[in-house]
Every structure is written in structure tokens, then in C-alpha cells.
Amino acid sequence: MVIAIGFEGSANKLGVGIVRDGEILANCRRTYITPPGEGFLPRETAEHHQQNIHGVLEEALEQSGILPQDIDVVCYTKGPGMGAPLMVCAIVARTCAKLWNKPILGVNHCIGHIEMGRLITKANNPTVLYVSGGNTQIIAYSRQRYRIFGETIDIAVGNCLDRFARVLKLSNAPSPGYNIEQAAKRGKKYLHLPYCVKGMDVSFSGILSYMEDKIDDLLKEYTPEDLCYSLQETVFAMLVEITERAMAHCGSDEVLIVGGVGCNERLQEMMGVMCAERGSKIFATDERFCIDNGVMIAHAGALAFESGARMDFKDTTITQRYRTDDVLVTWRND
Amino acid sequence: MAEDYKILKQGAEAKLYICNYLGKPALIKERFKKNYRHSDLDTSITKERIKNEARSIVRCKTAGVKTPCLYLVDFERRRIYMQHFVESITIKDFVINIVSKEQINCDGDIILDVVAKMIGEAVRKMHDNNIIHGDLTSSNMLLVPKISSAGVADNSKWLDVANLELVMIDFGLSFIDTSTEDKGVDLYVLERALISTHNDYPDLFNKILEAYKKFNKNNVKEILSKFEEVRARGRKRTMVG
Image (tube, rainbow over the protein chains, first blue to last red):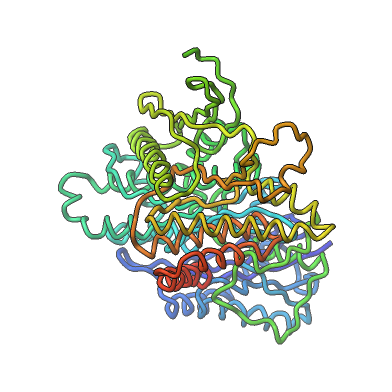
């Protein structure tokens, strides 16, 4: 039995989670929210994490009823992410590991999302669509690695949505993507936007700059709701298309959606229609697990720890760039 | 024409039927309606892709790249009718099922070299003629015998590489563009597809790129530096959240 604690702070979410053999004992989170029209910057985000991490840690320990001495391994996000916020969590994780005299393990953030999704949905060997503010990847498992079949060649889909929310000055609470989703529900008129699929890769920067450049003219003819609706319809159609392409390519009949954008219900709905037409199954989670959290880091770390992975204290660094396929998956043998 | 088609395969975006077109074995590629996307978007994407496919097939002919012959385009029914290669194998199946079996007696590497050269040259010919395929994967390339070996039942016909021709298919995402950026992206898409599908042959892409470079000195430097740039964008992108 492995009890693991996980620290996550690669972007504007700060999370601490505790798991015992896949059972979630605590999942606590704070989000750094910026004013409308502004994004989060590394320094301010790191300050937010510094101010909140002790509170979140205490809350998680209390909620789980676990004592530090019961913990088997301390896990933290090694990357990818913003340097300064990552560093805050790494330092606290290292301090805890030393204080409690426990082994420590750095975890790849993307792997955390995938393993969390598999744990919650019980999907066995799905094609994974990982969509968030910083990532857009189509991933499938093969020979001890999560291999990237398709990804964005410029900005992430969440980044595209967030930045468009800034153009419209939508609120960043609880998240810009959520507010776009709500506005899109009231949109009616569809605007044709650039549609950019390259094989199993996609590109979003063209759509964003098209809308940024023309926003004043567009608002004369379309409501902000129409634009949110058109943007969502277009970018999600691209994502569903490349997912289907990857499924056909790999002969897979399961899809798992993870990452912050993954809790968008319109994306889940579109993916569901595609899956139904192919006779495939869709797996998705809600905001508790889609959005960055500490549990996913604890769970992925626990899996690696159980399969024998260890990390020297001197290697417990962070890295802003850490590819999903860099990780050797020691805990799967299929 | 009787509508007694046999469905060959349902791909990601089209159903393939086998039929007989004026006495020739033909393939119908029907881009069926995708209900997940907005119907206006679906209509415009489908129409555009049918157009692109037809246009690039014709253009490949003049570039000396072998593709299926185009027989008929039917926008109304969202279909393209084209030549069907009854005897054919995708590069993907060829690498997985033929090359790997021959690896034991060392012939695998040699035949793979020959095929990689064919791929590199074909891609180069397309790019020299500003045809961007848009979806270069090992599933979108076929090997077809020059002289029919229909009598040969086992896989040995695929070992006679001198008798094989490369046929490019699936031009739905293709377009015509002179920019080096698009050619770089095209190469990048191919590299990524090969790495993820054929991770047991890490050299395959380099061999293809070698042939791509050697085929023609024209402009190659610009395309390759653009390719490196696109690659760097992908590999080193910071990924937050």
C-alpha cells in the first residue's frame, strides 16, 4: 500500500493531493485569478503560490486524516510549466521530504493528467486528448512510452481561448475558458474562421490573430456570444477531427479527454457524437480532476514509486520543458 | 451504374467503397457528413477537401508522382471516384509486417533503404511542384507492383523491391503553396508520424530526408532550415498548465 502526497503548481493552479492506492483522500486547490483582460505572469503566480501553499498543505493533511509519518513518498511536478511557480512547489516538497525523512519523486505534469484520467474513468488503453492552457496533444501508449501522435504546432487550444477571452474582456473567474463556454451557449450566428489541420497536428495562432485583428468589425455584425460560439465550434471540430484521425491510425476504440479544456461540455459532447458514430467509447472527467490538481501528481508518482522508480535528492530539480514521451513508463507492461 | 458497392474500409473522414467504373476497378471515397461539427463548417470543409484532393492528384501527374487516376468528382454525393489498386500494401503494413520479418536475415534494412529513397524522392518532387500533401503518414503511401504478381500468394512479392512503385494517396489536406514554411511543416508532420508509428525504426525518417536532399539541390537549404525551425517550435515549446 502506497500513500503519496502530490504538489502541483506548474501554472496558475496550486494543488495538494493525497492518495492511498488510487483512493483519493484529499484534493485541495487554490487558483490565482487575474483581472479581466490580463493573463497570469510567472512572478505574480509564484508569489500567489508562496502565500497559499502552507494553507493548502495543512488543509490537505487535515482532510485526509493522514499523518506525515504515514506517507510513503512525496511527489511534485518537475515540469513542464512556468519556472517560478514550479520552483515554489519543488522547494516545499523537498523541505517536506527532508523534514519527514521520506523519498521524493518528480513527476511529469502531462503523465499526471493521463494517469489521473485513467484512474477516474477506468479507461484501459485509450487514445488521449490532452487539452489545456499550455498543451494540446494526442497521445497513445506504445512500448513503455506515451507517444505523441499529434499536437499543436504553435499555441495551445486553452491559450487561444484564454487570449480571446482577454480580447472580449471576459472575467478570469473561475476561468476564462468557463466564461467562453457559458457565453457560447447563447451564441447563434456562426462565423467562418480559419480551420487549420495539418495531418494529426493543428494550429491555432492563425484563428486567434484573425479574430484579434478584426474584432472591431466583427462586433458590428456578431455579438460576443456569437464569436465565442463560432470559436468553440471551430477549434473543437479541429480537435475532434485529429483525435478521430489518430484513433483510425492506431486502431483504438477509446478516447480519454484530460486537461483543463477537457471539462468543457461542448467539447465532450462533440467528441461523444464522433465516438458514437465510430462505435467507440468516450471517457472524460469533471473539473475536479480535469483542471490541474495535486492528486494527479500524487497518483502518477505513486505508480512510478511502486514500480521501483526512485530519484536522487540532487535530481529533484524542475524543468520548464519536459516532453510527455521523455518519460519511461515503468508501471505498465502492455 | 448499379449501386452495389462493397464497403472496403471506413476511415476517419471517409467511407471507401469498391466499384467498377467503366470496366475498371475503382474506389469511391465518400466524405460522409460529420454530425459533431456545425453543418456549415462541415459543408465547407468537405467541399474544400474534395477540391484539394482532385486538384493535387492532377498536379501530381505532371510532377511525375504516381497517384490513383481520378475518374469522377461528385460534389452532390460528396464523392470522388478513382483508380483502385487491387494489389497494394501501405508503407505502414509493409514496415510492420514485411520489413520486420526480413530483419532476421538482414534483407530488411536493404529493402527499407530502397523504399525510403522512393518516399524521399516522391515528397521532393511534390514539393518542387509546390504540392503540399498536408498529411504525410505511412498509411498514406502505397506500394504497388509494376508488373502484376497476382499469382504469387505469399508475401514474397513485396520483397522484389525493383518491381515496386510508390503511390501517394489521400490528398484531402493538400494544397498548393510555394512557401518553405509549408514544406517544412509537411516534413515535420511526416517525421512525427514515423516516430510515433514506427518507433522501432528510428532511422527511417533520416533515410527519407537524405533522399529528399539528394534528389535536387535547388532550394533545399531554405526548406531544411525552415524544417529545423518548425521542429524547434514543437520540441522546445514551453508547456504550461
